Amino acid sequence: MGRPSKVQPTRHGSSRRDFFKRSGAGAIAVAATAPLLAEAAAPVRFEHGVASGDPLSDRVILWTRITPATARPALVLQYVIATDPALSQVVQRVSTKTNPGRDYTVKVDALGLKPGTTYYYRFSCEGVDSPVGRTKTLPTTGVGSLRMAVVSCSNHAYGYFNAYARIAARADLDLVMHLGDYIYEYGAGQYGTARTPEPAHEIVTLDDYRQRHAQYKRDADSQAMHRQHPLIAIWDDHETANNAFKTGAENHQPATEGAWAARVAAALQAYYEWMPVRPVDTANLRDNHRGFAYGDLAELLMLEERVNARSEQLTTAVHPTAFGAGFTTTDPGYGDPTRTLLGDAQEAWLVNRLRSTPAQWKLLGQGVMFAQLKAPGSNQATDPGLYFINSDQWDGYEPARNRLYAALQGNAAQAAVNNVVVLTGDIHSSWAADLHPNPYNPALYDKATGAGSLAVEFVGTSVSSPGIDTDTTGAVAGAIRFYNPHFKYVQLTRRGYMLVDVNRDRVVGEWWYVDTVASPSNVETFATVFEVRTGENRLRPSAQTPNRANPPALAP
Image (cartoon, rainbow, N blue to C red):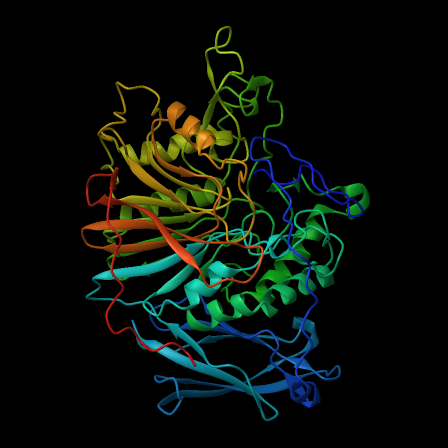
């Protein structure tokens, strides 16, 4: 939502489509740092760090990328896994290979590990060692808590990844959840000017996407985060192109950029090469929805909402509002139950997992806002209605959303589903909401007490992409809350991350902000916190959670 509406590779500056208007960053572009002379003389280099992800109770994906001094048909390397940072207590030592067909990336599924255990690992090739990484498997029994950072929208061109660095310094996290827009597809000057993207044009081909991923993985703050914590990630739209759907994207022009299917195939090949993510279906890489059982405490359900099944967004908004054109449920296509965001198979999978999981909490990791977001007509005297303003989020797929609400409510044949927390990225701003099919009706939802709410949503801000940076007084945020009673917190200007802390009694969401993305900085600020208690399905103000005592040592 709110990115450039249409970008030509040669154009500088960005157009704006809706009320999330973006202001350009005034930071100075910096040149890439040259490798150290000693590294340049080596036969191979580990320029892109190490990473781990998709942890299970007995395995985890380990990742790195080797840069050979000259092109090679194949490279043999080794990795070691140990239970201590010095790598003296070795549990595995394994050889593997890579080649230019996979862009010299290395991704192994390290099997045979113990549940709920912190491990340290390192890759080696031809006498050269990678940095040491730290990871953790998922627990199976006796689980009392889960503590994780939640991030999204890391736009290299728009600023520095200071939020990643702050997350890397937190030794007590179990994992990091990335909710998409891990990379951005735009060319130089099209969506941010703080740093110059590689390549400088909008990315379309496999080589383009590989270069962009490589640039992001060279970022020191990104490397630090990946080195210290396992990642559970989904993509949103910018891993392919803005406002993507199954058969196209707003920022894809077939006449000049080729077939959409070819672009998606290129983008996803690079994504799976460069990300510590385990493919769900190698015959259909577009589908990456999957679940992670954190013992019986929490089920993490990661949703694919872009390229596998999503129907095209509605584009016929005609109702003027205070924040641009809006929609009503009577507009053509809006009430069409065949329009989908998840697709039938994933929707059925999600409902089944919500109903059948033994976990205390169900955490949905997904890309676009689930809660309704409405704005008043631009002339309330003659048009007193409220209108949906963004058809790219769940508001644009109301029948599909209502089917999920019905699953939460239950019926004579199925019990209600409680303890659902939706975790969301995409919108470059911070929100906390109660969830109800019609929170605008006070007979159904009580904004003062939260009575009637079926679940809650925590929306995290971006790592670097801009929000409504002009809302310095909070007037826009205040107006949004006035017209949307289910929102308990709205902050539109600040960048950072969420900290989510889970135990048997409650899920707490904390918002942490960095002071700038215009330059490197280690300053962060705690902003606010809300919680949902077991069985209540509604938000309450809460208190900042303490750091865990004596966490496993960070990787050196």
